[in-house]
Image (cartoon, rainbow, N blue to C red; front, side, top):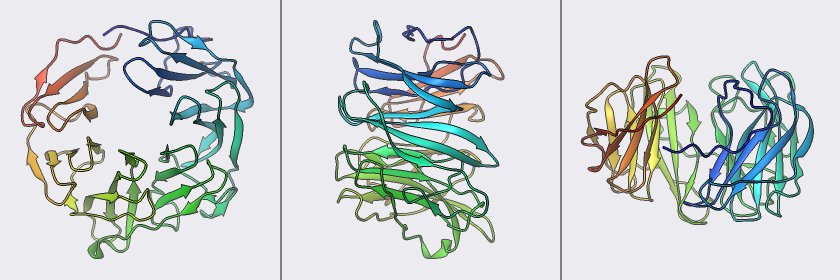
Length: 326
C-alpha cells in the first residue's frame, strides 16, 4: 500500500481517529481535515482534491468557522455538489452540528442547516430534524435529495431515525418504516442507504425487541427514489457490532458472531458460512463484486491490521501480504 495522504495542516504526529474521505473513482477523491488535530479547538476546515489517485493534491481555500469539535462527513454527488457535516459539540449521546453545502466543487460553502443541542426529550427543531445521538449518517443521492439515518439507542421516544430532504438539506421530513409484526415495538437502528441509481437503493435495518431481547437484520429496498421502502426477510443476528455490504440490489452480506450471511435475491433468503479465523477484531467488510470481498482485522491494541480477501462470496478467506499501519 502506498501512502497518499495530503499535507495536513497542523499535523505533528497526533493520533487521528477519523478524517472524512470521499472516493469518486480510481483517480478522483476529496479529503477533509480541520486546521488543528491536537486538543486545541479547530476554527477552519481544509478541503483537498486529487485527480491522479493521490499522487498530487489541490488544496482549496479553507472554510473559516467558529470553534468546532470535528468534521464528521463529506459527500460529493457530482463534481460540483457536496455536503459536509461539522460537529460543534458532543456529549451525553447527543451532538450539536451544522450542515454545509457547496455547488462549485468546494470553493464556496453555505450553511444549509444549523442544529442546536437543547435539553429534554427528542423533539423536532431547526429544519425538521430531531436532536440526534452519535449514530447518524447523511446520504445524498442527487443535488437536492438526501437522507439522514441512525438510532436513538433507547434515549428518545421515537423508535427510529430516518429523515428525507428534497431541497438540498434545508428542510427534513420523517419517514416511518413498516416493521415486522413480531418486532413492534422495537428499537430500530437504520443504516446508511446504498443508492445504485437515483431510484434504486438498499437500506440495512437492525431491530432490537424492547421486551424479550433478540436482534434481527432486515434489508429494505426502494425502486422509486425513496418514496416507499419495503422490508424483505428478517434474519437473527448475534453480536454487539455488525457489518453489512450490498454490491447491487440483489447481492448483500451481513457479518455477525455466527459468520457471514449472504443473499443473492435482495434479502428474501440467506445463506451462512463460517469464518476460518477470529472475528473479534474485524473492523470492516466490503465487497466489490458478488464474489470478491475484503475484510480488515485489527492486531490486538496495535495500530497494525491484517487484510483478507475472498473470491467465493465469503466461503473461504486468504490473508494478503499487505503491510497496513505504522
